[in-house]
Image 1 (tube, rainbow, N blue to C red):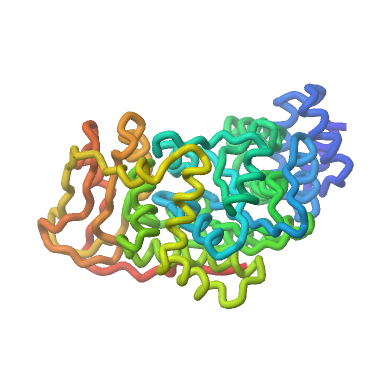
Image 2 (cartoon, rainbow, N blue to C red; image 1 turned 90 degrees about the vertical axis):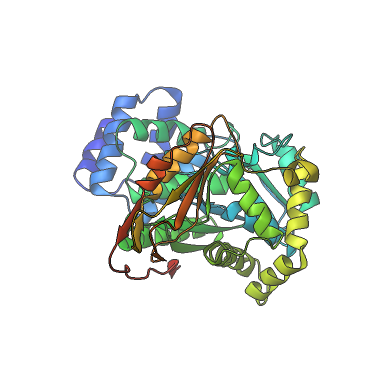
Length: 412
C-alpha cells in the first residue's frame, strides 16, 4: 500500500482519504518506517497536496491522539502564528479577547529556530505553570475566560513524529503538509473558531506574499471542512513586530503595552488586527471598538493578571520583572536611512542571550525606513554576553528610504 501511495504521489496523483488514514495509522504502529514516510513527504513537496488531501491528512493526524471538546453553548476561539520575531500577539490578544467576553483556549509551542515561543516567554514569570492537565485547561477557560498552555504530548502525536522527520529530511516547505500540521493541532485543541496569523517576509517561513496567501487560504479552507469558522491574516515579518526580542523581555513589553505604558504603533496595529478578527468570528458587533475599549479601561491587563494567577504566577512576579541591567548600546555609524533589519540574526542572538538571563535580549530603537544621523541609537543589547557588534551588523543603512510595506497584506 505504501509503495503504491509513494508512486502515485510521485506521479502527481491525489491520494484518497482511506490511503491517508491507513498511511498515518501504519506509520504510528511501525508498519511504515521513516524511509517510506520521508519518500512520501518529498513527493508531497514536489507534487503538492490538494485541499481534500490536506483535510484527509489532518483528520488522520487528529485521530492519532486525544482531543478536547467544549460544549456548543460555550463558544471558544483560538489563534495561531506561523512564527515571527518579537511576536507578542498571543500574550496581548488572548487576554484582550477574553476581557471582551469571548473564551480563548490557546495551546502554544516553544521557540523554533530564530522565532520565539510563547511558552518559553510565559515561563519567565516566576511560578507560572504552562503544563496543564486537559481537564484543568478546559476548566480554566470556562472559569477565567482564557488559558495559554503547552501542547500535551497526547495531542496529535502523529504530527509531532512527522514534523521531526520533515525537519530532518528537508521536507518542511509544502503548503499542504504545513496546513495539515497546523490545523490538526487546532482541531485537537477543541476551539470552535481559529484566526491564523500567517507571517510573510525575510524572517518568515513563507518569504513571498503569493505563497503566504496560498497557505492562508488553505488553512481557512481545511478548517472549514471540520466545521470550524476561520480567518487568516497575511502579515509582514521583514522586521521585528515589536521593539523587544527575547523571552522575558517580550513579556515585559506585552505587560507595558496592556498597561498603556508602551504605545508602539506596529505592536498596537498587529495585536488589534488579530484580536478584532477573533472577536468578529465570535459574533461581537463592532469588534475593533470593543477591543480598544478593553485596552483603554485596563480590563485586558486585569484579565492577563487573572490568567497568570490561575496558572501559578502572581501580579507581583509579573510587575517585578525588569530588563537585565547589563546593556550595550548600538549606534548608527553614519547618516542615512534604515533600509533593512536582519530579524533572523537578531532572533538567533536574543534566544542565545536570554537562555541564561531570561530578561536579556535586544530592544530595537529604530524601525525600517527611519532617518538616522551618525551616533543615533539603533538598538540596545542586554545581557552579560550580549554583543553590540552582532546587533549592529543586523542594521543596514543606506542613502535612500526603502519603499513602505503594509503590516497586513491580506485578510482571508
